[in-house]
Figure 1 (cartoon, chains in turn red, orange):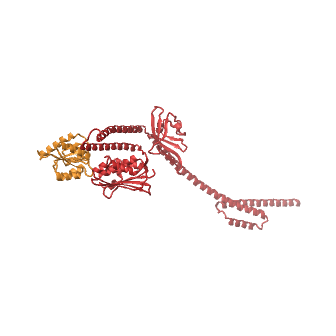
Figure 2 (cartoon, rainbow over the protein chains, first blue to last red; figure 1 turned 45 degrees about the vertical axis):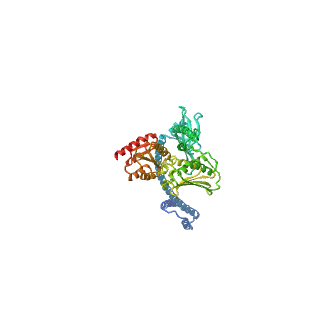
Figure 3 (spheres, rainbow over the protein chains, first blue to last red; figure 1 turned 90 degrees about the vertical axis):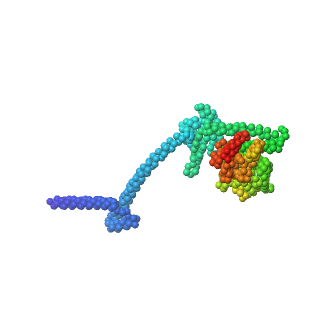
Length: 472
Length: 127
C-alpha cells in the first residue's frame, strides 16, 4: 500500500513539474510573441532611433539582463531584438518614401507624356502645312545634306530637273544626270555669287532649259553646316528675252550709227574744203552740223553703255596713262564751245602726279560729261575750274570740276547719280539731255575702284569730284 | 512798205537759233534772238517784237515761266511755242498764258511760215 502511494506522489510530482515546465515554456512563448508584437507595434509608429539612442537602448537592456543566469543568450536575444526592431522601422520608412516618390514620378511622367503628345500632334500639323506649301510652290526646292546627298525634293524640282524624287533621295544631286542632260553645271552668275545658272537638256522633249539655283547654307544651332537649300527657278524665257534685248540693242545701235557715220564723213569732207571752196557762213553752219552729229554719237554710245550697265557687262580696258593728258584732250575737244560762251577755264594741276592704271577712253567719257555739264550750266563769261591733285594718305588722285553756274539743291546732291533721276533743271538738260551721263560716269569711276560725288560750290555753282586709286 | 516784221526767237540751242534766224532773215523778217528766258524778257521790253518764237525746254527758266513773266507786262504780243516733243506736257501748261500756235522743231523750215503769218494776221485783226 505505501508503495503505491509513493508512486502516486512521484507521478503527481512529475506531472506537476512537467505542467510547470510547460506553463513556463508557454509563458515564454507568449512573452516572445508579445515582444514580437510590441516590436512590430513600435516599429509601425516609432521613430527610428539615432545612433546614440540606439546605443543607450542596447545598454539599458544589457544592464537589465546583467544578473540573469542566461546572460549571454539573453543579451544576444535582446540586442538582436533591438536591431531587428530598428531595421523594421527603417525598412518601413524607406518603403513609404519610395512608394510616395514613385507615385509622384508616375504622375509627372503621365503629365509629360500628355504634353509631349500634344506637342507632337502640333508639330505634325505644322509639318503637314509646310509640306503642303513646299509641294505647291512653283519654284523647285531641293535640300541636300552636308555630304551632298538629296534629302528632300518637291514636285516642282522633280519637274525642272527631269528626275523622280524616289530616284534622287539619298543620292548625290549630280548622279543620274547623264551627259546628254547636263550641258554645263555651275556657271557663275556675275550678279550674285550664291546664284548659279544650270543648263539642262530635258530628257522628254529635247528642249534646253536654264535654271537659276539660289542656294543658302543650312546651319544648326551651334553654327555648323548641316546641309544646303536650293531654290530652282526656270529662267529659260527670261534668258531668251535678255538675248533678244541685247541683240536688238546692238542691231539698233548699228543701224543708228551707220547713217550718222555717213553724215559725219560728208561734213568732214566738205569742211576740209576738198569738195570745193567754202564761204565763211557755210563753214560756220557745217561746223554746227558736225558738232551736233558728234553729240548724237555720244548719245547713242551712252544708250549702249546704259544697256551694258543694266546687264552688268560694262568692262574697262586698263592701261598706264597720265591724267593730265586726258584732261588736256577733253578740254581741247570742248575748246570751241568754251570759246563760244567766253568761259574762263582755269586749270589747277598738281605737279608730280604719277601715271596710273586706268581706261583712258572711259575717263575721257567721264570728263566730257562733267566738263560738258559745267559748260552747259555756266552762263556766258563764267568760270570753270578743273583741278587734279594727289591725295597721298588715301593713295588716290582726285579730279574736280567746279563751275559758277546754276547749282544743285542739297537734297539732290547724291541722287543725281541715279539713272533716270532728274533733279530740277540741271540733270534734265545735261549734255546728253537724258540724265544718264552722270549714272554712266559713276559706273565708270566705281569700276576703277574710285568714288564720285557732287558739292555745291562757293561761287554758287556746283563742284563734281571723282577719285581713282593709285593701285587698281 | 512798212518796216519788216520783227521776230524774237528765244531758244537755248544756238545751233537751232542760227540757221532759223538766217533763214527767216532771207525771207525778209527782222530777227533778234536770246538764248535764255531772262534775256528774252529783256528783249521783249527793249525791242518790242511783233511776234515771239518761244522754246519750251530751257535750263534755269523754261518756256512756261518765261511766257508767264512776259504776260505780266505784255498781254498781246502773239507767241508761237517751239517744241521738240510731240507730247510735251508743257505745251498744255503754256496755253493758259495765251499761245497762237505750236511749231515742232523737226518739221521743215517752210512749215513755220504759215504759223507766223496766221498768228500775225489774227493779231492784226484783234488790233
